[in-house]
Length: 68
Image (cartoon, rainbow, N blue to C red; front, side, top):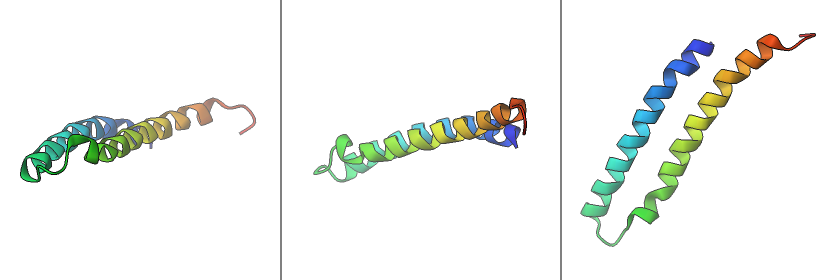
């Protein structure tokens, strides 16, 4: 399980870059919107990355807990 979550981290990081590109294209296509109007998408992608990282390391912490 740990390896699956750790392997997903590079994909999540790459997706953040893809989202930034999509935001730029949306801003070009719809000039009435600016990058700040879509910033929430990057924030969500960062949260997903952080959550995956936290889940991956929680397996390791759980393994070393005593009395489990």
